[in-house]
Structures are given as C-alpha cells and as structure tokens.
Amino acid sequence: MGKKLSEEARAFEAATRRHLKESRAIAMLGFELESASRGHAILRLDARARHKQLNNVVHGGILAALADTAGAIAAYTTVPKGVALATIELKINYLEGVLGGRIRAQARVLRTGRNFVVTECEILDRKGTLAAKALLTFGAAGGHSLQG
Image (cartoon, rainbow, N blue to C red):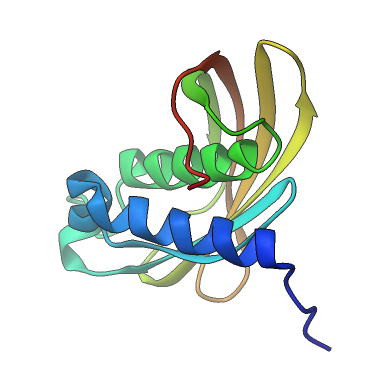
C-alpha cells in the first residue's frame, strides 16, 4: 500500500515544505507539496477564481509556474546537497482548459547530468485528465540546496 519513506526522504519533504512556505510567490499562488521521492515530485493546487483568466479557465502562466516548481523539486532530489538549480528552458503544451478544482503536477527527472537536469511534468485536472505537459531544463551550480 503506502511506501515507508526513508529518514532522508522525510527530511527532504520537510525541508521542501519549509522552502515552499517561505516563498512569497508560491504562498500567493497556493502550491502545496503532495510528495517527493528520488526523481519525482507531486504538487497540488486548489484552483480558485483568482487563478483564472478572462475565459474562466486557469491561467496558462499559473500552470507553467506549477510545472516549473514541481520539475525543480524533482530535480533537487537528484543533485548533491549544495547545488543550486535555475530554470534554463521550459516548454509547455496546453492540451485542455482547466476549469478549477484540485490540479496535480506530477514531475519526474529524465536525466541528471553534471551541469543540467532535464525533467518532464504532467498537469492533471480535477478529473485526472492530462491538461498540460511540460519539458524543463535546469542548470546546476554549487551554492544552495533544498536539502537542509
């Protein structure tokens, strides 16, 4: 049924939750960590009226920010402590309009190299329908970490 998290995984999730709470942008947007494990992260957003654009669907920029955040968290699970990541490229395809409700961003690492991490992220609407898919590249450099 539910997998037991290692102490390291629990510590990473706790540190990630702290970092998300400290980020004013993330707090404003309302992203929450559902889970994180090596190479994977799931974020959720309870989309409300403030997240919608004029056509009454969730704004694409919010979905891109959700994918970017989930992809970064997944990437951080695969790099050494002390490595900072910065988004170099984000490409997203919007497949369905998202009307609101609980949205999930499921990210996974495709490759971790010495200087780059490549992730993909699927955004699922409240019914579990694939609403958007993103491919992200992060540059890696020493200096910062979510771990700790």
